[in-house]
Length: 75
Image (cartoon, rainbow, N blue to C red; front, side, top):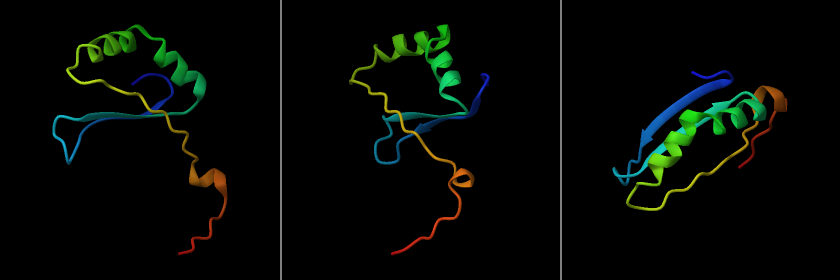
C-alpha cells in the first residue's frame, strides 16, 4: 500500500461480470494526488486505454461519521 491509502479494493460487477471497479480510500487529498501522478498509476491508465469499451473515473468525497458528530436519522 502507498502512503495514505487506507483501502484499495478491486471489484467485479454483480450485474455485469465484464465490469470492474477500483475503489480506493485516501487519508488526504495530497496523498491521492501523489498517487494519481505516480508511474504505476500512469501504467494503469495506459492499460485502461486498451479496453474495448470506454472507461470513466469518478471521484467522491466521503465524510467520516466520527467527524460529523451525532446524526439523527429520519424516514
